Length: 526
View 1 (cartoon, rainbow, N blue to C red):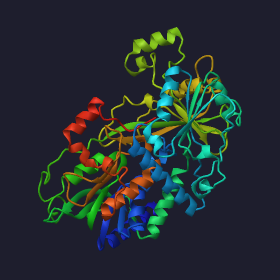
View 2 (view 1 turned 30 degrees about the horizontal axis):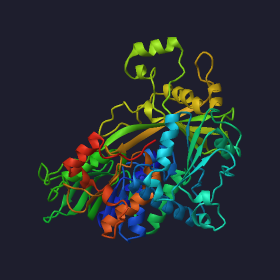
View 3 (view 1 turned 60 degrees about the vertical axis):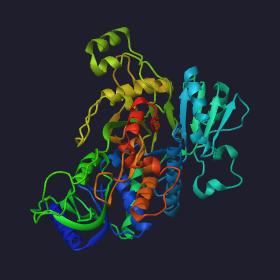
View 4 (view 1 turned 180 degrees about the vertical axis):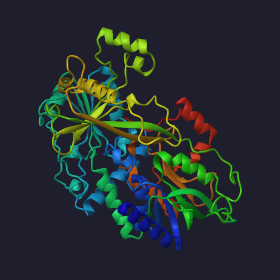
């Protein structure tokens, strides 16, 4: 009780201090993208920033991230360039804190055992998106002399003239079992022996997302950013010129909202971005004495941003059998797959109908895993296909509804196709012989699976968004925060991707129809 009372006193003391100030920017949402927005606004552009969230920073979706990164985005040159920039910034941040967030460059391995999968790998290696970030090399048969190594350098060390040429490419494609065996020979054998194509995303790996976010936050605070939580933005007021003038913040236990003067507001609310978008579009002139809108209805006309939430789940398996080497990379199985059910199982699943019936048929690939740091040796496992049918409201529940423990069983069954030793965790009676824990959050995405970064159409001038970062939020957060900060500051924008991510693209009927029909490609997601 005393701790709660002390926390409340601190919150109201901060609120009282904040109320008397005027900020350049209020950032709504303190996940990885919101923290990055605050970081680059305050540190690069010297803006005064107030970062608000109803939860502690980095405690919602960012806390259950896969924590990985990659520049591999075939089919989308803007996304490849965007992520290349984000990884540049990640490496800069790692260098300035002696890599306190344990960034590595172990890579992603996309594995296939089919001709169709090999053909898709070849198309990806030839993609123009990769050509702009280092291109790809194709290795066929033994004798190429390249071996996997878990300690590939990055940052300044990556520019060494003695560094092998293959470590400077965006991707490596090993075609055929002999080429694969030679490359993977630095690890104990663990992949499916019939693997015939291995596409390696070279500039990829993982980190501690929490520590990376905390580094950004500490640097932002050092540059003057203030944080206020728990606090919830409930309304925005604009002046008679249609520009953001202030925001209303609800504090727990406060009878009246806190009014904070500001010139700009950023919607970086992650899975609640749709809720904040509605608040932005309902901005009014001015607030009444109660701090609530003085009139009802929209002052501006435009369609809401097309954001949707999708359940993201992951499982951690204690790998007591050492099915996967501790130094392994991220492994992704590319091929569609049928789970190895018995005939009786297939009949039962089909009879159940719904989601269960789909498990009896051909399922999409994309299930993946990587070693998870710490002792005992564990594996982080994912398969987005297990939850994509679940409908999530605009204001999603916390925590998300997961198919546990079915999710864990499906993951192990599927991943045993890529890594046969994982099959040892399934007992003859179908039960699990492993300790598995599950958690999850949400991916917030637009229909084209590209981010929304820039001014909000249909809201007051000074209203911005940095949202829709889908399954790449942590890896994209630095470039997203930098880009958002440039929009707010009026700084030059990167030609390679800034225009492609503007929210105003959804005002075009031709664009919406193109995405719906497939004529306009979507951002790549595993």
